[in-house]
Amino acid sequence: MSARQAAGYAAFRSRDFRLFSASRFLALFGLQMQNVAVGWLVYELTRSAWVLGLVGLIAFVPALSLVLVTGHVADAVDRRLVMLLAHTVTAVSSAGLFVFAWFGADEVWPVYAFVALAGAARAFGLPAQQALLPLLVPREDFGNAVAWNSSVNQTATISGPAIGGLLYLLGPSVVFATVGLSFAGAALLASAIRPRPVERAREKVSWTTLLAGLSFIRSRPVILGAVSLDLVAVFLGGATALLPIYAHDILHVGPWGLGLLRSMPALGALAMAFTLAHRPVTRRSGRRMLQAVALFGIATIGFGLSTSLYLSMACLFAVGAADMVNVYVRQTLVQIETPDAMRGRVAAVNSIFIGGSNELGEFESGTVAALLGPVPAVVIGGVATIAVAALWGRLFPALRDRDRLIA
Image (cartoon, rainbow, N blue to C red; front, side, top):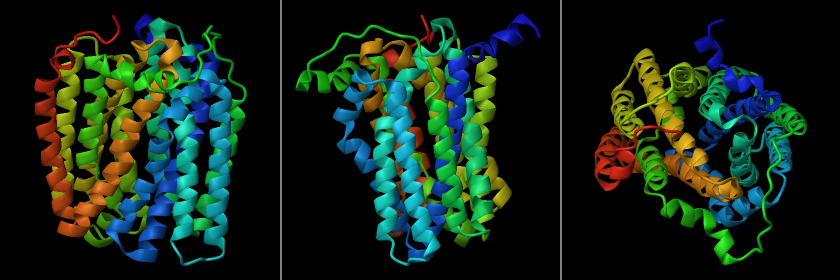
């Protein structure tokens, strides 16, 4: 293996990064399977685009309501322990969904309750995981770790929906049982991680410390521009909540087809993440991010207008590849420029932006689709995303002109 090839795998020299990656894979694998099963089950019960969007909103509300607490916990408590407990609680949520599906209940509100419980667990787990990553590898390998962490995430996001869609043919209870086992395995692996010790001064809890993450982001135009760009672009351009409708009513494929559609963005992101691990963004990183968001919008429009399964899959592949560039630049900027003592609180705010772009984006898509139909909802979202990329280039010149990611 050449020196350049070896550098492409630098993060995996760390035992703890390998354990972290395996735990993240199992957790996201289970989560993606659960998303497919919940989406199909809810649409079978209700045939409502609005209700599909409401599922995303319910998953996001716990993160929004707990943001001040979760960030402080990630900075004050053992982050590995928080990660372990979050996976355990999500496994309990999956067990509840298993019981619901096993007894064939036809009311949708218990699904909301278990989705909210899993959302609360992720609200604590995500900031802790984001803040933990920089402590697992040397600073010079952090960009490589971000790329590979994203690759692992996207591999799970590809395989989870596809396998979840196939398992759904055996019944939703089979999917939820598999999800519970995946999260149990993720918790076990998390318990074995031993991050690099870092001295952190104990801070007395106050409004100042609770709001420190938000204040830090507001004081850094590059970080504020990066995280707000992701929030607005994916909020407007996200179409994942409508995939059950596209699979069922437009492309006329079953749950297996829904699994394929949900896997395509992750497959595109995986291909891009693998590329970035070996050929990282070294110059003009801000412009690359803005260009990627514009491409995200173009591919979203293509998906919205498509009536072919294969063209839809290709457009979703491009959506994922473009979004991966956005994620890579944003995550590297946020983590590398934040002091360790602040990482949990900054990560909590960042997770709200991420959750807002995903879960609230699903709610927005479902609401607009209920009013105008699924195709106009997706196309309008894609056009708006392109406009946002152009606008953010003007509003945040520090982000637009950012050259190197890691100084």
